[in-house]
Amino acid sequence: MRDLTEKDVESIEWKPDWKKIDYLAAVAGVARDMLEEEEKKGNEKQYNSEKEKKPLKKRRMEIQESVQECRLLSKKKNKNNPENDEKPMRNFSLKIKDQENQESRITKKRNRKSNQEEFGSDDEDDDCDDEEEYQSRMIKKKRTASSEKKGRKITNHQAPVPIPIPNPIPPPQGLPIRFKERIIEESRGEFDNEEVLVIQKTLSQSDVNSNMGRFTIPSRHMSNKFLNEDEDVELDGYVGRYKYHIPVSLIDPSLECVVVHLRKWTMEKKESDKSSISYVLNGESSWNKVMEKNGLEIGDTMQLWAVRVGGKLWFALVRLNGHDQ
Image (cartoon, rainbow, N blue to C red; front, side):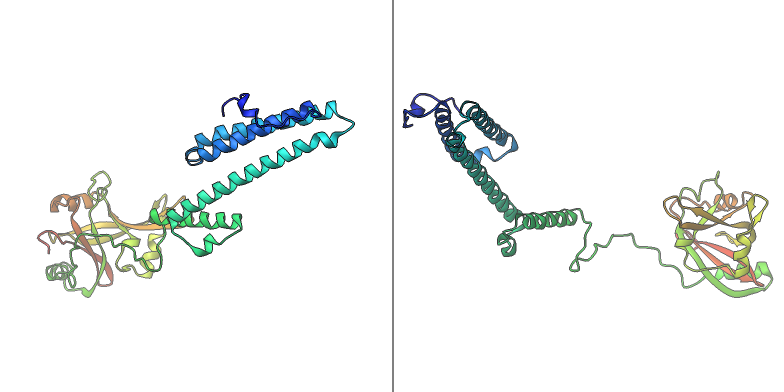
């Protein structure tokens, strides 16, 4: 706002019985009218950003401070008749409040228009007179829009987008015939003709790491249970500091019979009270020998089958993406 000049106060009708506080109030009224006129002319530009709002707030604060100074001056010089001196100031304060209310209405109207452009027109929201309820509705709409944008919410009309996966290698109908014949030959005819697919998995880095020397069978990825009750109890036991293991005969992809150790690992999760269970085939470099002889690599798709020979547990390891198919 520019400084006042003599031309700005020419329209004031000065009265001879006015006191100093009256003159000050009249000049302040002219300043207020000038401020209102400037705000009306530059209303659209001044409210586009928060930086343009700050000067107007500062001016209103300066005017309110001048009003307070006038009141203090009036009380000091006119203690005997305070009513007459307070009346011009009281009217001026009411005009200041009316101005602030008008600005508040303009701001609310602008915000509602912006919300209509963003969320669309809603008769129920437009007719809402309670400002707190209206703001609460807008907050809910913004949260819903933000949640949908980030993909956190799926409505009843939306179906989850399927994740494309490579065509999996279809499992055979059962254990290949050559493995059955090899088991019958090795067991001298004691094959119980029971076969269970334990797991079909792709070999990972840990499976082909010779330093680890193990083939892992996570229970959450198993196709079927393969242990009987006695075997399951045995694997939960300890021999000294070490978990108990069961020696099991394994027919590898080259149809050679080797002995491996079957162990059960239980891993506690720090984030929750739940635990995960994995079974492991290892023991005296036996898995490393199977891996090296058959040329197993990361990415090979393997099947582990469980069979019974005279009631005892045996395994057959089939490679699907090699010559074992």
